[in-house]
Amino acid sequence: MLLSIVIVNYNVKYLLEQCLRSVREAAQGIEVETWVVDNASTDGSVDYLRPLFPEVHFIENADNPGFAKANNQAIRLSRGRYVLLLNPDTIVTSEALRGACHFMDSHTNAGAIGVKMINGHGAFLPESKRSFPTPWVAFCKLSGLSRLFPRSPRLAAYSLRYLSDDAVHEVQVLSGAFMFLRHEALRRIGLLDEAFFMYGEDIDLSYRMIPAGYANYYLPFSILHYKGESTHYADRRYLNAFYNAMLIFYRKHYPNAGGPAWALIRLAVCLRKALAGLFGWKRTRPSRRRGGRRPELMYVCSKAHAADVRRRVLERFPEATSIAWEAADEIGAIPPLDGYTDIIFCHPDLSFDRMINLMDRCPDKRMTYHTFYPDTDRWISPTR
Image 1 (tube, rainbow, N blue to C red):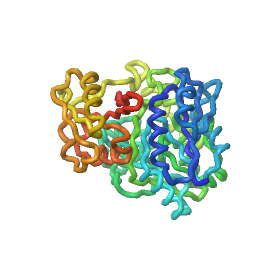
Image 2 (cartoon, helix red, strand yellow):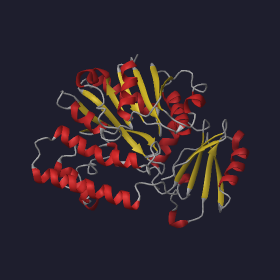
Image 3 (spheres, rainbow, N blue to C red):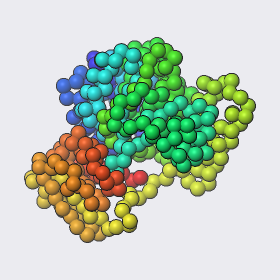
Image 4 (cartoon, rainbow, N blue to C red):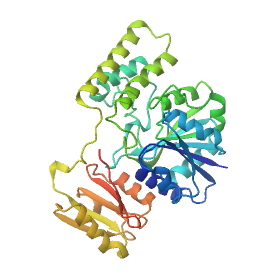
């Protein structure tokens, strides 16, 4: 078996359905097995998805043991030479899967690979490549210095924004939303640390790769990540997990950090956590629009679906000032997409690879992209 894909789900069945569609499409011709670990979802995820994806192995947990432990359940059962940890709120491409496999095959020192993640507006997600949160790096991040000086190697090392998003880099930290791992490396360094309920386990795993003699690589193959859609951001439990993860990481990997450094980190984490609890933490926001404009839409689908999709677009966006159509088999250049507030892609008229490519290459990062599935009459839209 070449590749095992592991996805942990909690109450996001429609996003997971889209993710599994993309996996099925991207994995054509690749020897792959897919595992979904459901952490006691209450939205009927497994009953809904199992008949649609008979090739997928489902593990149903009676409670929610956390992200790390759920991933480990499937990793222990997996048979692939490589293991991909994948979030359910992602769309993967064949380029990303094949590119990662080929890179691992040709770089025996590679222990983990991350890719270029873009959000629902086509904008690059800086957590795609990061540095270790040393006391200084973490302080710059938590204090806001990295935001003020995003191109400074010293002050903005956490997100590595001074490195090109479109080149291969050896980096320190990769995101658990798409973490492509060598199974042999996991056997040597151990699986995800289950002390992390959610968040931080990817930093810890990245950290342990390097002393074991492996390298972590960032590859510029694009995937879509609806950042945050797979967690309940307003939930106090997730807020605590997010802000406590760094403290767990420090206690584990920097036990000899000086008292002042440790005090600064604790102070910064507690302050950020208090502010998040007071003013709300990453709560869902409406999709942004350029200057508050009313929607100007383009939908991309086949001629066969054009009339039906237009009707659905009018129902969903009754306030739209203009609606244009582009035939899916004719779309090629980026300029026709530029200038709209919303773009609706119809699948399978347009492949996932083509969708992600268009989003990534379009220079306007203020548009909102939606995906429509005629076979289920389902819309997937970013809410952040």
